Image (cartoon, rainbow, N blue to C red):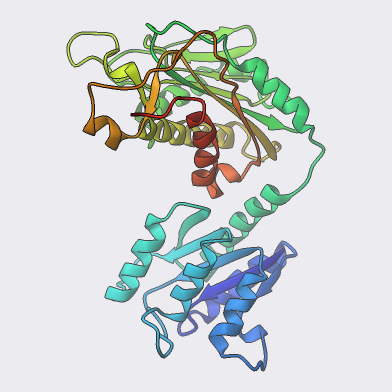
Length: 375
């Protein structure tokens, strides 16, 4: 794998060397500006050309913004980042405890705000940076590695794990997401699935995690269903974890009633695109965190993701802007047993974090096509 290391030169010799050592340790080919030698092009064009031939970019940001080439408002490193983020995985590392100037502070904020294809980490010194780059490159290597996996078998396994579909238009709309890992192997022993510590971790993450799945106002229950661990809430949200490391997540799409218990089914006459998008992100983040916990040594290298909306037989699809502009009228689905097939994706494991936004979009668009357009 060819690695392009983008950073400021002044004050970064030790840190750049640490990134180079990290890449070499994993037998990757590190590329830096000084590697290009004499070329007829400007140094910045040579760097951009080297970036374009690389597989991944390591971005190291410190206190200073760096050299701004003539006829440009962006530093060379900033230009390299803008170029890389459109086509490459970017591994960004920001030095901690610094006091950046206005331009560099804005650059760091831009990097930290962008999520597509980007891994972000912090570092204190060169040794810390080397360890962080090594771990991140290891994840990228696993994401692009081939292994003895049977994607057809994984897809078939994912489909069998989807619950029976509800076609009752009076029930709450549910997003169902199944993530199956491969190569197929046992990840959790029976005793681990019975361990209360695992149950409490799942509940804690679902209720209080960064992207929580569950409603904090109602309780949860947990039990074994056959060999699977299931954590439930009464409004339809639940998590299922299998001994093979598969994660099944069900999240209600309808909002709770403003008065009393239950769901607001009048607001559930439509599917709001942004709601589906948000909950897809929550489900993928939860699954990624859970898989990293139960399989910390990354025995599972490949994933199949199956996604479906159920309880939506007679609903239409709208954006939030369309719903706000015309909340009392919508084109409803015809129902009548129309089959909406699950969306199936295959991905490397690290895509759950490195390509999160692309995964969400690749699921969301096919789901949207299954519904009548809003009026």
